[in-house]
Image (cartoon, rainbow, N blue to C red):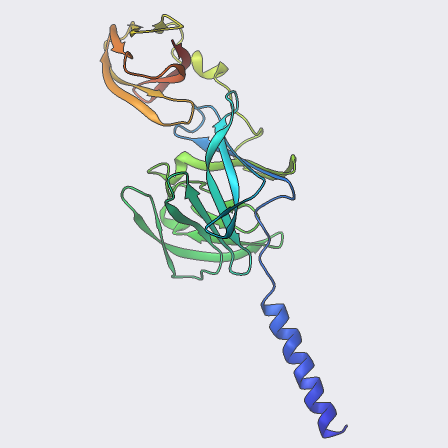
Amino acid sequence: MKYIEIIILIFVFACFFEEAEAQPFESVFGKDTTQWNIVYQIPDYFPTLIFKAYGDTLVNGEKYVPVYKGYNYTPLELYGYMKEGTDVGKLWFRDIKGQEELLMDLSMEKSDSFYFGLSEPILYTVDTVYYNSGRKYISFNEANNAYPVLFIEGIGPFNMFFSNEVSDPWYAQIRCKKNDNILVFMNSDYDTCVDTLTSVNNYFGESIKIYPNPANGYLTISNNTTETGILELFNSLGTRVLSQKIIGDGQVDIGNLSNGVYLVDCQVKNKHFITKFTKQ
């Protein structure tokens, strides 16, 4: 073989291996629509939260995908924007106020660190990097935590919006994911993509009643137990708007709340009564 032919072959092989190493990560987005159903706030006792991404827009000259948020029974409203870099396996989220945060980084390796949590960031260290069904998984301190914190190639952060929504990864797990209305991921802890309030409303039986509905100035709590509990109200975007202790019967002032549909969560001794009401 001539010298020049050897040089050409070396160049071809070098280009081949360089191209192989530069293969992009699988995109988290479908062709038209992408939907994440999230177990949110109170696992098993709270309606499924939905994030749906579709379309595109330019922000400062960069392409973003608008993201809409709502519960499975409420209209979706614009929540923010996502930007993806498949060459580096990164996913960013930009809220409607312009604050941007890195949600996922698939280029990380064992012992690398990543901050989770917006108000009080917690440093997590990569515990394991592995592949499952051709997808790259990055696990953070899985051996030391009761619940997994993961990045999943083509799916996104398993603990979706843990970074900027809730204080514990258990409160933000992906329940399922659909690309173009086709199921591409299902959390092994669940059989369906959505949860309902039906079974939860009977958790206390008839021990707690909340009325009237619709309500205006006050909600009345009729509680047969004398145990101290917590009552919390969440608006249609999942934001907690009120939290107070309850002991027996009482009233909750809702006069300052905007009109709309709210979720009520009463917690007494780790039991939950969840219902919804309309503020008029």
